[in-house]
Length: 481
Image 1: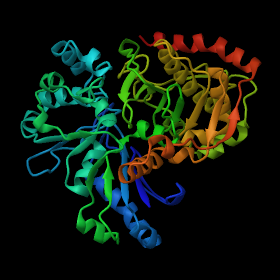
Image 2: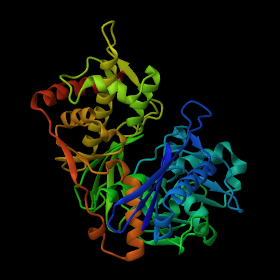
Image 3: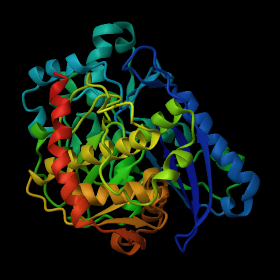
Image 4: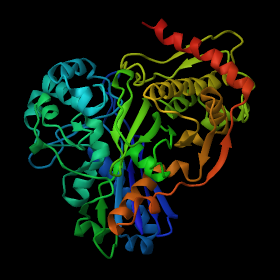
């Protein structure tokens, strides 16, 4: 039996998986985001721990027998947020999250200090990454910076509490701008550029490697008959890739969660940071992930539902399963700024083309289309590196919507596939990494792809209509300059 714990931005999700890779039980606990200023986003690391414990306590209450048999625990989590710890391993402040834009100015400073940054890390310095945030801390919160004993990423802080070990996996570390993605090791030059050293960083492992054991008192709390091994784990998107068996080059998938991305595994690093393509280590050895990433995806639908005072299901129901034509309204999904291809922390969302005839359905459809157009930008940035993307699997909460996947298939003009258990990807991937760490099985034998339960093929007429609309939509961004 294996546990997969996914520390998301909006919730912690913990699943219990048996030896046949069936999800026996699942529990979640919601999280909130603090926004002290516009464009800022923070969370209290203590809230993560409380949420993890709440999910495990709930599993103990309802599935004590299965929980007792757990052999391994895998962790996945939101990337890029630095948890700053003092010498007593107590957080010095709230964690600045991946979608926080305050460190935009510090990115230029960091690239000036470290001219080899893009070559070594495979990425452009952007405010969402951890390293620019540390430059911001040094500039604005000097006393806190001076007290830093250890810097961890979110899921590594959860591991520290669960095991007492300061260990990070290379996929999550890739999102810090401190990792040499080619060598899969910390870059001393990168750390020095932010005033840090290896002594303040956790030990690195591969995601499928052993990385500590559960503390005895916690094993007793949850009635476990042994101290489960904890795997290295992965950042949320690499864990999602493991969950859907995306372990071969070209196995492209699209995430429609709070944020969104188009992601492809590769065997060699072919970075394109100038087009804001992310290059991360995969959660298994000798593979990397290249990704075009957007900051707001399914969260855009949640935003419009909140604004209109309706549930997401009620908004989508009148629209049916496939659009008859593109909406007359256009939407830019830049509610928290954007990454690929703009790297613009200050740009914001936009509704364009409103008139007295505009109804609710036109606006809702425009929101779905705006996210799809932004994913087309991500896809095009990836193909600029030489990748060929002929089809893609879809995962995340947004993949539940037939309409959204139909729009996506027509905007990208490729087949889009919905997967069985596509919403549990990251937690399920974490559980698979736990199994690999415990058993030493081959990666291919464990990380098999789930069934494609439905495919959405592009319609020639609609695809042509969206191809005509896409350049018009892209001009809306340039109008905001």
